[in-house]
Image 1 (cartoon, one colour):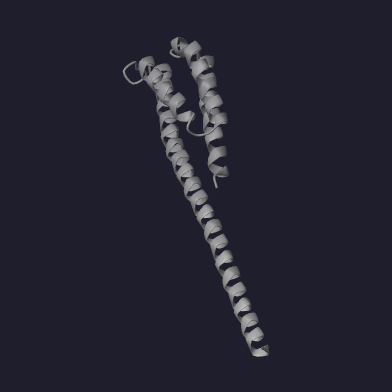
Image 2 (cartoon, rainbow, N blue to C red; image 1 turned 90 degrees about the vertical axis):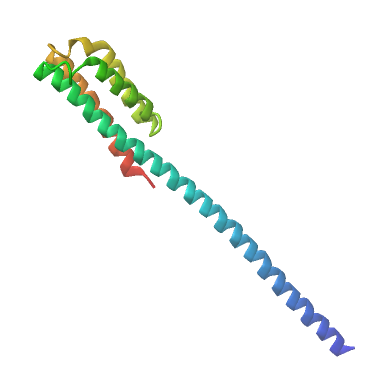
Amino acid sequence: MLSQLSATEALNRQLRVSFFTAFFSLIFAVVGFGYNAWRIETTERNDNVRTASFVLLETLAELEQVIYANHYDGDLSVGSPRHGWVKIGLISDLSMLIDPQVEAAADQLKDNWSGSWGRINSDRAAVDELVLDIDGVRGEIQRVMVDLD
């Protein structure tokens, strides 16, 4: 009877160890899967933000070129306000993919452009304001890029 009781206890002990091993293995698997899914999602978001940021920086430089060509060179083929409107539209569209502060800075640039695009050929203050707004969008992009995970 005593040997039968110790055999039952040994079997119960072995079953408990197996149960806890299976339970903790399942917990670690779920936690690992959750972390992996989060990491993939974060990496994807960061890649999208980086890509949109680089394209937006290029577009800001192109807009600045349009402004300078119009104001300083009087070249309406390169400095055409229609080209500027296209750049402004792209800047506005891409900014919402990056960050709310970038979007706000881009909206400010768009508002300033809509009020001053007709004066950039002759008004230095309008050019300076637009360039400051462009620099503001650049600064927000740099802030976002530094803060990426």
